[in-house]
Amino acid sequence: MNTISCQIESLTSLTVHVFKVLLKPSQKVDFVPGQYLNFVMSDEDKRPFSIASSPNSDLIELQIGAFVADSYPMQVIDRIKSAQAEQKPIEIEIPLGNAQLRLDSERPLLLLAGGTGFSYIKSMFEYLAEQNSQRHIMVYWGLRELGAAYELEETAAIIAKLPHANFIPVIENVDENSNWQGKTGLVHQAAMHDIISLEPYDIYLAGRFEMVGAIRGDFVEHGALLEHMYADAFAFI
Image 1 (cartoon, rainbow, N blue to C red):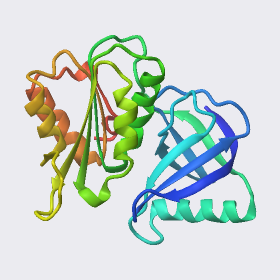
Image 2 (tube, rainbow, N blue to C red; image 1 turned 180 degrees about the horizontal axis):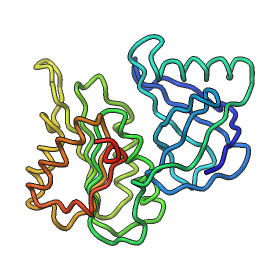
Image 3 (cartoon, rainbow, N blue to C red; image 1 turned 180 degrees about the vertical axis):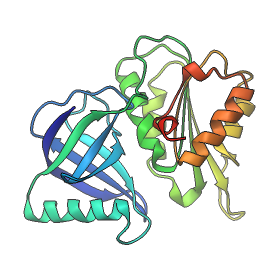
């Protein structure tokens, strides 16, 4: 793990509550898709965020969901805004985590995320597309409502570059007046409906801890092997 100084390249809004941050590190950083970094607020206050960009990118992307003023993530956004205004660098610690993509595996892949857990799997499928991976890949993204979705077309375009990959966004609650034509309900139930058995798959999960815990149990009943399931949340549940 290294402490790296970064300039704020940009800060934009993906939705009302989700921010996209692009950081320009002062030196080349090495990480594996699926790892995370710590945003250093102080020596005693370091806050983890999944890396949303491929290791091949010159910039580090974060996707930060900040739903409440003065919340844990909004304090980070405020620090970023301040650093950007003053043209001052921020510091990160990188890389961290043990739920990274297993690069030596050729098993089919199931990448599944809820909400801004999407950043965790985005790093993986971007990297796999750059590598022209021939693996069978299923990418599921679950969202509470359609208004929480972002960059759907961009994501579909990246995954379309992979010869054996599918992108399936799933909206839990759909307004009857919307024109959503995709899948609805709980994202992991959609995956279990589509996939007869999860036994052959390497499975990567991201989302709220309680969500990941529930999915782990349901997936094991659907054939998934614990030794081929990965999530940072597993260290805490």
